[in-house]
Length: 101
Image 1: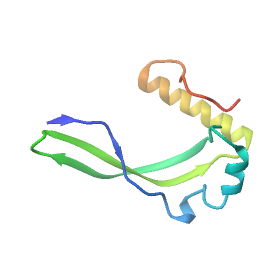
Image 2: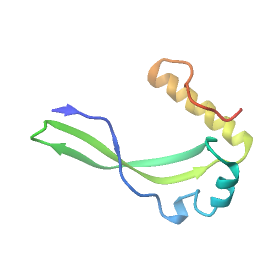
Image 3: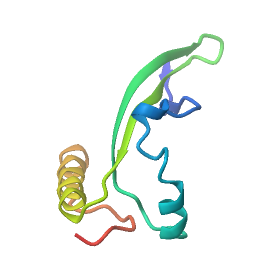
Image 4: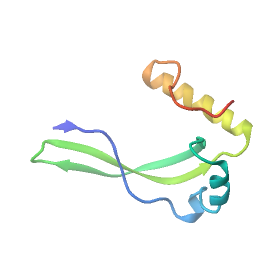
């Protein structure tokens, strides 16, 4: 059976676990396209098996999202992200827009 890429469940965490809730005005003020660094916790919601197609794939669901708002936390999160990326891929840097750290 072939394993396909991860799929994401629809929906967002409830208000108490969704740090984007209540900061809509700040997000709109920040404007177009600026990345927001956040800590995200997810869980495997289900594993889909398609017997006829011979495929399977995990479906993950975001259970908590917490945007980071101060420079020190953002810089620390970006360092963690870069270290995890290097450990996973062996490459030094992501080719993604960044928040200055």
